[in-house]
Image (cartoon, rainbow, N blue to C red; front, top):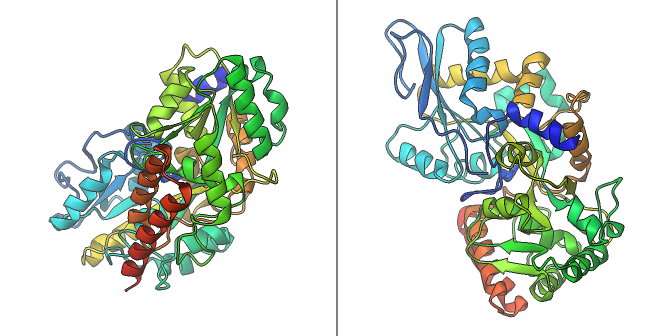
Length: 463
């Protein structure tokens, strides 16, 4: 029954690996470290009268209309041109004087496309992504417009969760993102394989949680059952890195940064202990040539008993990609020493590039207001993303069994540390460190190298 529901959900979802593939991991998570990489890269689609449309949507036409561009990463159906066309049509019915072109990015090439556009003086007006880019990358570089006025004008902004609000605010006090949705990234197990191996006894099915001791026993049970590779630590790049970070941090209660997001703390006793466990645990393999997307494919084809790169969008999209799959996927929080997980969250929303054109920036603000101020339009925006509201409000998925199942993880969402200075360099240092650990380098030395690199990047960003 669950597989049928997933197939039905996938029918209206673009096939994307939000937060788990390619060269990203944000948000999805990334998003949520993003969270995937395989989005709808169809180039620009212009919406509006033909005589006013342009290829990049970044100019004002002579007929009094303002042309703006929206570049969107594959955040659920925000990467689906058919669905987005409907949203744009709704907007233009109310604001026919604003024309919008949309470019659909993926996580494998999207960052490079944005960089090239910025260098060419052709940055998009609007972009849909998460704080790790809007705040900690482009915001740090002074490329983004201050959206504080939107936060002050929107009465519904008072209902935004405080951890989300903090993530959207730069350390200079300016808001560079207006958020739409969020998720808490999780992992998943092959339920049928766990059952056959007698490993279900080590998980709490009601709460979708388990302890570190239960995780260790489950891996041993799977190996004794004949499943050589229970799971892999993929570290061929940063794709899906939110999964490996959450796994390491949760095993013994470690953190990735300090609470103030000023320095990196992977060299803590808790994290060293977690990495040493994974380094020596039979049934867990470090794979230096694979990223999150590869792990997802191996898991869905039955090669692995568990996946550390997972979220609700992946369950839906994989149902379409692997219709022959015979086993049930059971989503899980990461194992913890005390059974209380702290999951990495993914947050997605709109940012505006400061292009110096007041008319275009105002038009971009109008678009954000339309998508977020009305509860009707806001819910539509959230459901398009296939994640959850960033505001305190009633359940928007009351009739969706899969979304309701995954909603249990939102209460486990932990600190959103992906806005720590030097974040871009830290992500690269992370997967390179995992490669060294996988090769047998002493963990205490590997983590010190990581912290040195990451903290130097943080200090440079703060100067």
